[in-house]
Length: 326
Image (cartoon, rainbow, N blue to C red; front, side, top):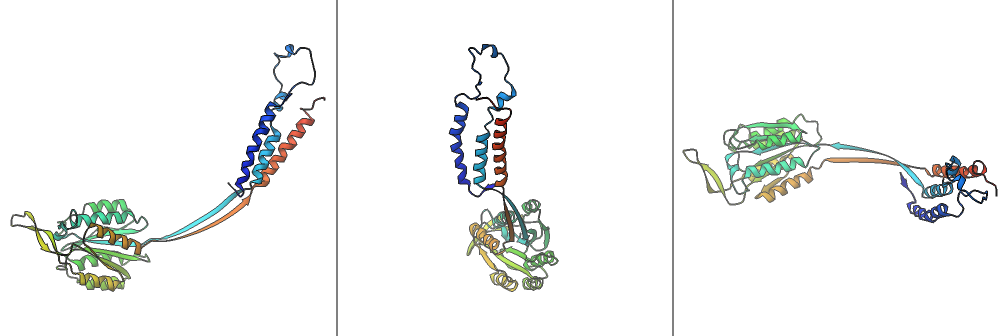
């Protein structure tokens, strides 16, 4: 319940002196019969009529009138909302070069951490995960169980498949997971740090297929510009880090994004990688439509009626059980 004129409730302060006067006024409840001594009556229990004197009928009526003046109202509201979710497939490169340390602690772990934050920020979307190296497979199909998706994401590591960079195959796998989706917006975020050197499908062919199904592809090139400490293996299988030139096929990644209506981003450090996902998050915001209906009904008449009952109650009591001789 709300009040249209709540400032009138301050009038209740005026009832305080009235209440004090009613409690302490002289002669309240005194008998009209004067006697030389009332000691014989001291042991008598008060009658019900005695307690009726202490019901503050008039004070109660005034309090109810103040509430009525403040115009109490009941609000009946109805709200409906429609959420249009987006289907998103993440395609992440897990080749050996993703262990390069130009992104801390390395490209793969940085990509995983930022992607998991992105997943947590979009609770209304179906999101899935495809990983690729020389081969590609689906780590998690489209799901709105983001807790399960994040747990599967944490298990991703280099070495799950043979080393290589099959960008076209990874993209085609993600397209295959989205092609039957009924969502109005279908998106792939493809992250890699190299050039396509494996797989039977070229990146641009996979992009053409994505375009056919109305899938928008955002491509991300992960890696600094210039030299980066890159892992290499010796003949005994031991890993060593050496400075190597970072080579990302930005031309192909740009073409994939342009062909499908997406955008290409370059992430040279962890901060810029965060910025990339934030920009994608803003461009692919979930649509939210809210309609609210509100109707107010006046309820002051109830309080006026109760005030009238209180005044009539006082008058009736004075004419009957509380009636006394002058």
